[in-house]
Image (cartoon, rainbow, N blue to C red; front, top):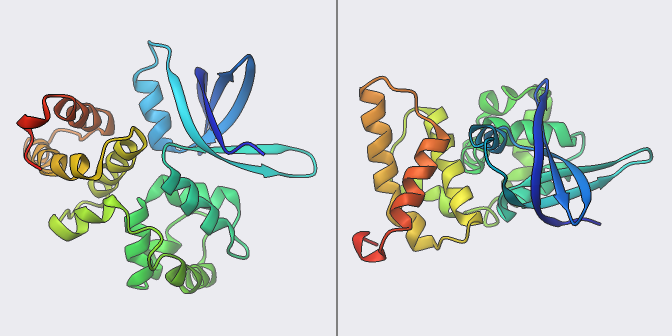
Length: 225
């Protein structure tokens, strides 16, 4: 059973709404389905070779072995919880994480937002009701991660921007930045999204992540925690 992998990116590609990466790990090529946000990050920096680390959910079937890769342990745990619900398959789980951040799904479950849940391809009204019912207890304490800081301290109207900022937090966490470091960078990220929005400039996950990492990699004395 494969649960974690580190290796060099060989190539990445898209088939319809599925996104894949081929990783060379000690001479073996592993084909892994990844999230759209991570795929876009890989394509943006496609000019250079990369050594990637992914948390893997390995699903064995009669005729195949499927690998699903995530940049953080929280994403993987969330995905596994989703799969434990009757009638929910891997592609629906990936679809949820492609469209919404974990905190957005938690909020939708807690507020019983059936409209948001059912907007995900493959999820109808009945399944959205079952998801909300079964996930409410699972998410009570399990996934209250750093991402929720956005909801507590900042009000982001745009759901797309909210998802990007949430994905940045998860990515920074997967890169071993501390809670305090991630918390400290949020005001800078939010300020930048406000600046770009006012100038009608498209907000990019890659640019905001680079901004965050540049600040965090400076002398820690320059950042207020």
